[in-house]
Image 1 (spheres, rainbow over the protein chains, first blue to last red):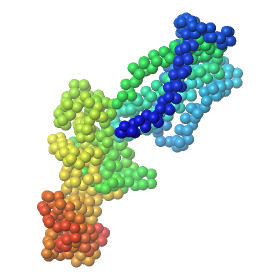
Image 2: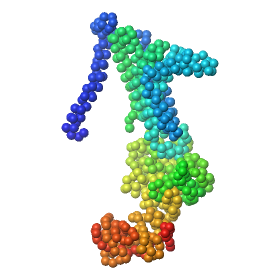
Image 3: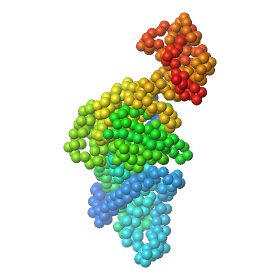
Image 4: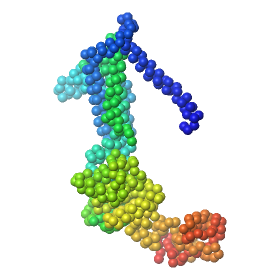
Length: 288
Length: 334
């Protein structure tokens, strides 16, 4: 866009989108900030005026706060580890020529199309139910006592469910990346005397670096706010209360909008801390 | 040492026979060029020698030992790929070190060989750069460097210059030739460019559809092409092949005369014709000529300037001692 005219036209045409996006972001953010400094109990007297940092202090000093931050980080970390490692494995496998390739690829992507609520319910009722779930039957087949997944291994179960949902995403991104690897590079490495394991470590894995970074960053954004999977399975019980879920409880179950809003601001801070760490660790892969 | 012997080697991809059974011996220290049109199987043949493709039948011997089922890394051959196939996330130093690292060469020996290769290839200043920061010619040299440090018994080049611009190609051509003189190692070089083949080779193998058409030194192929295909493929501009009545005068199906072996005159000669396009290069003049029976257009090459233009009438006379004759099957008749 070279001329003055085309530049101003471009600005004009971009304006609606920019205004809409800004409004979408700024209005809720400002309202959250506003409510976080007020005592606002919708069913118990409504807006009761300014309280300063009272909500912030109460939210942090609650015994649920630090466990919920830990739970959030464990879920995010666990799901990231599982999806990235299995995703690389699946991508390598799916990249091999095989019969029925197209069908298999569609099947691999399928879980991503299932709504989080639905997939969590499927897992809860069809797999993890201690009485008639498939896993219970499997355990009984070997004469073992079925695990009560969602109460005995609640966090593991949530990580499993969420990983199942996000594995297709990771696989898909990594598969496209692996397909763009120049086969002559692998052949050159083969000629240079690198066995398959070293070709993977020295050629394929570095080639995937950028894609892995993208997977980690995008998944982190979404995983920090997972909610439906917890809501329909444990309802926040058995140590599965994430920061998001805690905020939900404060606002809707305790009917304390001010306290929840303060939690929301903490969530923003946590997300930014995580983002800074991630960019420090993996962000350099995005350059050059 | 680096003698490579192919014994009844063939290759099929499914139903398609890319290389019919073929015998070929490449002598130690020889610079051999595989040349042929696109899809003639020359790259496949190179990949069979490298071990990157399995041969369907036959045997490959390297230095007298059967290498048919030896994995590529153990054949002692180094390959330079068309795309260079440098490892983009490694510095030039690490790229060159990679094969030695895989072979477990001690660090000080690695450093010594990298130093020597970098010096020979003018890469000393670029050792810490990434391939992405280098020009095409430099990348090519890194790829060669990576091959040299392995101290292989033979080098395999797969169209290494086709991604370079014309000027750089001429330069790299000479660098590779000089490298061959210096190392005196067997080199097999695949190209579709007959100029590269003529300028670099000790011996040229002309391939068509997987068949070896002729094997010989560049000048042998130039002076005594064994059939019409080789005659038309080797030499630039292409040889004029004349069929019909003119050929019948010499008692054969086809006669061939190279553009540089035609005498051009404005007044008299064997064939009267019209100038189509005249390309004036200063050093030579290329004429595309219409009107000679059995060969249209015909090309003639004249040394220096020749003041003719489109539409002029000229006379051509072939130098009879330079005439090539081919029978109905396209084979050379002497």
